[in-house]
Amino acid sequence: MRKYVLIVASIVLVAGAILYLLLGGTSELVFKLEERPEEVIYGQLFEGRPTEQRLEALFIDTRERSKEINQPLVVVNYEQDSVPLKQFIGTMGNPKRSANLEALKMPSGKYVSTKIESHSLVMPRPDEIREAAENFADLEGVKLSPKESFEIYKGDSALVVMFWCL
Image 1 (cartoon, rainbow, N blue to C red):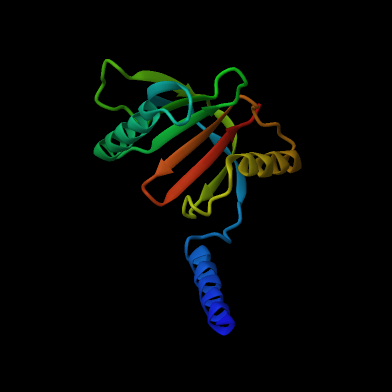
Image 2: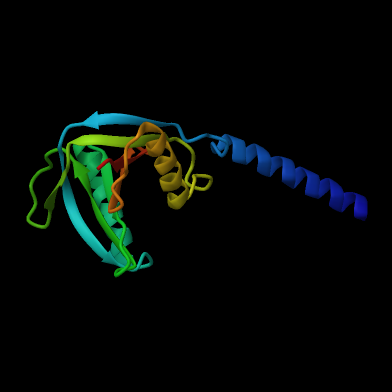
């Protein structure tokens, strides 16, 4: 009996390791410092708990709109203590103007960015990404804005995370 448990455990372990590799779990974060022009994001502000249904609905609606107009989905994460979660969720580019969309300017200037192509199951946590970006920024002699980060979803398989430099 013990022999069978060892065989099954070995198979599960090997399958898990292969799945982890296939999902991109060993991908390293490679950062770059880039100059970007001002861009406008059209969307809506969300403030509340991350478990609220309206957050999921807003994200899904915006993702569908981004596909319709062939523009990236953008999530602006605001760092703060007072509200559990504050995000602006929208699309880049000039969508068909809607009464319920707000315009948010993404300032021009220097950004530290990284492209993540691993599956969300094995993707680094946001705090790990920020810490690695801060370490890179220190090496480059720049300081990251502590207030926000930008997630740009390009299709279903690529995510670019950017931090504005002060």
